[in-house]
Amino acid sequence: MKLKLKAMDNDELQEGQTGTLKKPYLGYRHVEFVEYDYPRVRVQLSSGLEISVWEDEVIWDEYYE
Image (cartoon, rainbow, N blue to C red; front, top):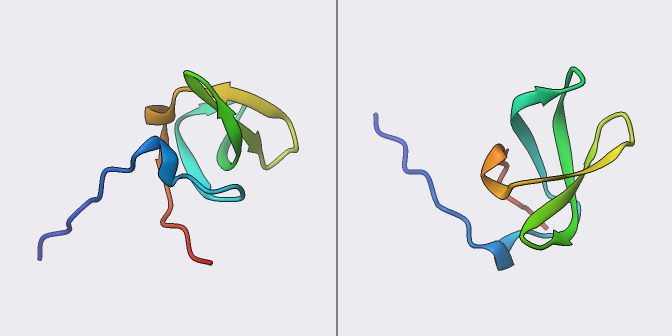
């Protein structure tokens, strides 16, 4: 069984979209998209701390409305 992964364009990220950091930050991996902070993106860790990361540092979950 082959899985097809969809590459996401910058304008496809939605506020509240979740993802997983490829490399943990202070032990946290789960993040939520907050806003674009070009050329990076601002995310909120599950602890509530907001940080800026490169978009490719996160494996983004599919966004469902």
